[in-house]
Length: 195
Picture (cartoon, rainbow, N blue to C red):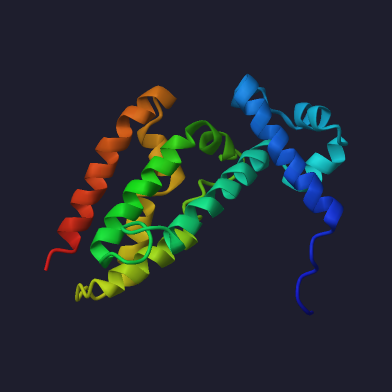
């Protein structure tokens, strides 16, 4: 079977070009105007290239969100404390949830457009979040019997579909909810982690 083949250089260039072009279109016209056809035309690439790269319109936004997610995860892995290493596990868990909520609601339009109505709600997409939360819970020495399930439940509180549901009234209202949601996350974590 072997290792997966590396992506061809032209495919990498096309992907980067499509992501940059999609961001430009969103900034100029809004999320609703970005379609597979419009992206192909604006990027000067064939529709087949766009369809192969993203599969669906939601795939465009999922790729944009994934691209920004990598930068977010870099802050978690090596950024300054308390989000990055160097703070206690409970403090890091609080900071992670607050930052994650801000990230998701700061990407409100893109996150909503990334949801594909033909697919089930992607409740399990938070594998990186779940691993990080599970690690911090283990470091907090809670004495809880099932840290894995607790990590799943806490991760669900930070998942895109759930946060988008809570802020379904629109992006302006979503921004107003960020601090309420972040404070609620902090209250939840501090209660769970109380000695």
